[in-house]
Structures are given as structure tokens and as C-alpha cells.
Image (cartoon, rainbow, N blue to C red; front, side):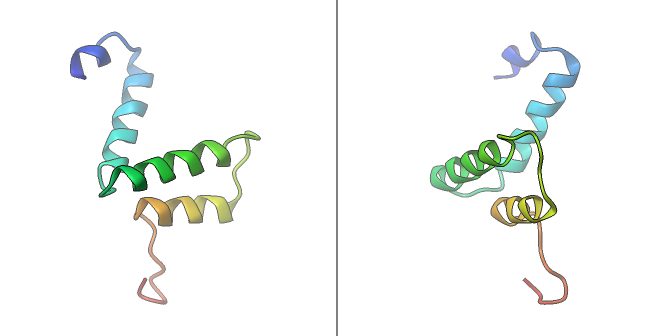
Length: 70
């Protein structure tokens, strides 16, 4: 995959590398597919609410409610 990245502009390459690192924390192909599907749907109208960002963060396993310990 790295040889493909060299053909991308630097900004696109950085975004793709970020996406790969974030989704690598997901354990199964089903989790990755669900996260991608939700992310695409979330961005469909070009706007993202705080609730959608929070839900997306929970799906990715990067958001945790410190007050509840979750």
C-alpha cells in the first residue's frame, strides 16, 4: 500500500494514513465496515452534529465518557 501512497498529494496521503490508524483499532472486518458505513452516512449532507461525532467516536472506540467510566 505504501507504494500507492506516494502517488497521492501530501494532504490526501495524511488523511488516508489517519483513517488507517483510526480503523486499525477496530478488531473485526464487521466493525470496520460498520464504522465506514456510519461515517459515510454521517457525512452525506455535508454537516455533522455533535451527537453524530460522539456516536462515531464511540463506534471507533476513541470516545469515552469519563463521568460514567465508559
